[in-house]
Image 1 (spheres, protein in one colour):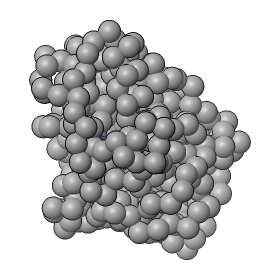
Image 2 (tube, protein in one colour; image 1 turned 180 degrees about the vertical axis):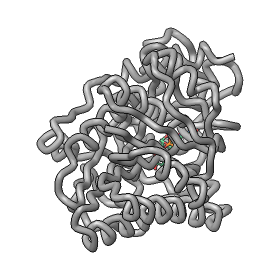
Image 3 (cartoon, rainbow, N blue to C red; image 1 turned 45 degrees about the vertical axis):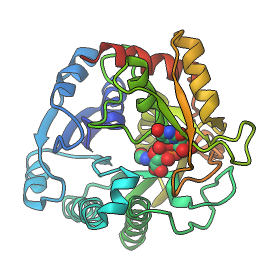
Length: 330
Ligand code: WQD
């Protein structure tokens, strides 16, 4: 299939592009480089021997996006492009609502106009709000704790309603848990701009000496060691889930958790990083981070049953691949 991947030079987007190409799909990338760099395009080519067609555009710019639809036959879309820093979304909600919602609307309008009938959306476990894990796709969605999460929940609702009103338009909402790791080549990985918000890129910066220590946000949660528990999933497993999704989406609205179904605590991840990479990670236990929930992990059985997809890579793979990638960064 010919697949338009928005945000295709980003962390999850670039890994998904690699897996799409390796599954013999033809990929077109649209990215504004706000949280990625043009060098990733060559690295995708280095891994796959294919350099995808690339458009440097804002996906909220309908005129620019329509040029892609006019000049390319598109069978499906995977929409990653969006801002994703939880803390920033609290400080600047309008930036998040404008970018993340308008991009979904622009793409949906053009899909209907050009009869592109497969729309895979990059959603997040955040949409479940604070409710007991394991989290299941048929749960009621509670309000999230931040505008970033709300943009995901609202985009899901928009896509569901459009699909119900347009019988041929099929959507697939993929709810990610905590993507970490890097491609085994160490050529692509997670390299956020500025000080990392998320745990794993922060750990790798500490390991490299770019940051003095890791702050662990609270060890007084009701968990085995008091630190937060998350469902960390290898980004390559996550990418493969997207390939399965766009190849197997059938009914109008498809919703899947992309997680491992297992919870790992912050301290367990830190200790696995230390042990597997034989490198120390100095850390300090500090106050809880506002908005954090104690425990989040997936019921991942629906994607396994309906898509034939299951996460295979381990926590050890995640910490090793993350570090191998970080070491190659200049
Ligand atoms: C994980 C755990 C922290 C940093 C968010 C979004 C989610 C997705 C992933 C975009 C928590 C602890 C973290 C640090 C720490 N976003 N932590 N010190 O908050 O689970 O999920 O990012 O795709 O939608 O909600 O991920 O990596 O920030 O935190 O102790 O410096 O690590 O308290 O328990 P989170 P995270």
